[in-house]
Structures are given as C-alpha cells and as structure tokens.
Image 1 (cartoon, rainbow, N blue to C red):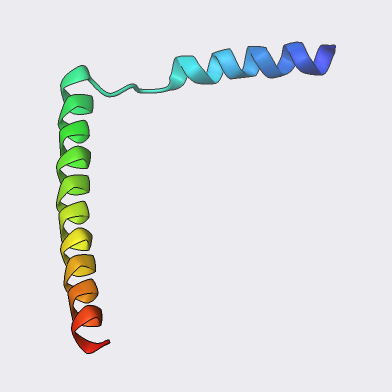
Image 2 (image 1 turned 90 degrees about the vertical axis):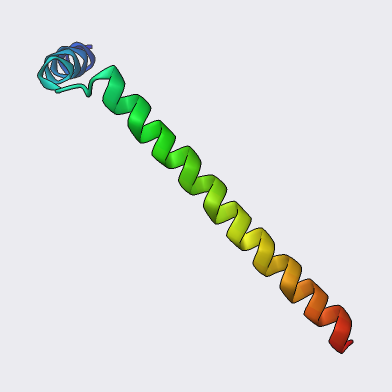
Length: 59
C-alpha cells in the first residue's frame, strides 16, 4: 500500500511541474494536424485512384 500512495503522490507532484500549453497554442496545433491529415489523405487517395486506373488499363 505504501508503494501505491508513493506512486500517486509522486504523480501529483510531477503533474504540478508540467508546463501546459495555452489554449491558443493547442488550437493552432490542432488546426495544423487536421489540415495536414486532410492533405495527406487527398494525396494518398489520388495516388490510389491513379494506381487503380493504371491497373485496370494494364489488366
């Protein structure tokens, strides 16, 4: 039981030392991730479509 309480007290102490990003920074990073994901999805979807068309043409 002592190990468990020690673990939780260390966890709480560590969480107090964390420097959390501001809301604006989180939102900016979220926008970057969403836009990047959309761009990569469009790219891979286009490549998949082109390769599927090439396979249909060849076979």
